[in-house]
Image 1 (cartoon, rainbow, N blue to C red):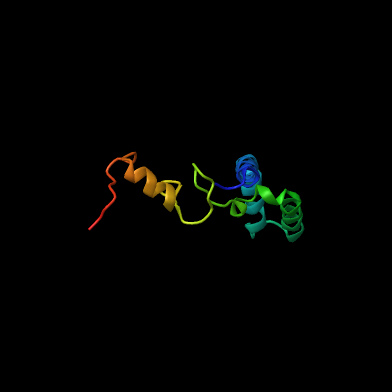
Image 2 (spheres, rainbow, N blue to C red; image 1 turned 135 degrees about the vertical axis):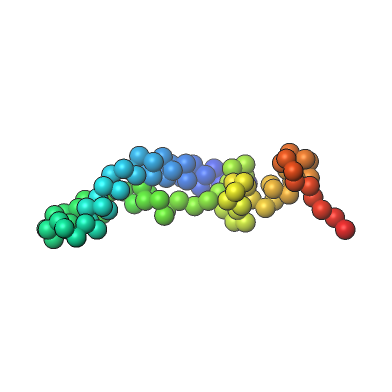
Length: 101
């Protein structure tokens, strides 16, 4: 089980990303717009830099929904390999069975 502080930090980051997504999209569009003057694009880049870093989507880290484990994460199921195996063994995931030979 991951530390609760790390899981809470990721929850906080997810909220910040959701909150700041529209602002970031507008500022990035202004920065990449070649038709605008250089001064206006520079001001947009300064505003973008002034936003909190944790509001950027690339600061997010995938974690298991049940345990918070950051490694061996399956994106499709949002689970770590350990929880995936446990749930598959107990028949909790439809269509998935643990194989043995």
